Image (tube, rainbow, N blue to C red):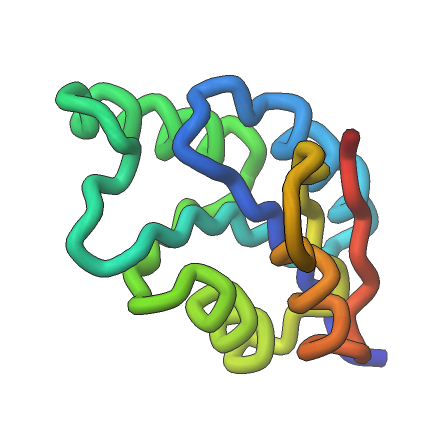
Length: 123
């Protein structure tokens, strides 16, 4: 049986502990845990002047969870996340729910692009 791979998608918020905690729960039993933050090319990783401090915080949070932190850049964040999931064989993707807004959510588009992936959405 192939190893399960859990991907936690975090944003520029430093309050991502509950997403990482869910990833830890879902990866019990030997699944690989991937903590992934993707930003659009040309933008800062954390959207603040204190990128270094925020990135260090995320690396520490990932390390405490027994995971690696992957920082990605892509012209379209959706493409970066989908390509990473495909390239690494992700089986479960954990994301925070999106707020109300117009149009189709990135979660809906990722679910359509990655039908073989189980999605775990935290509201």
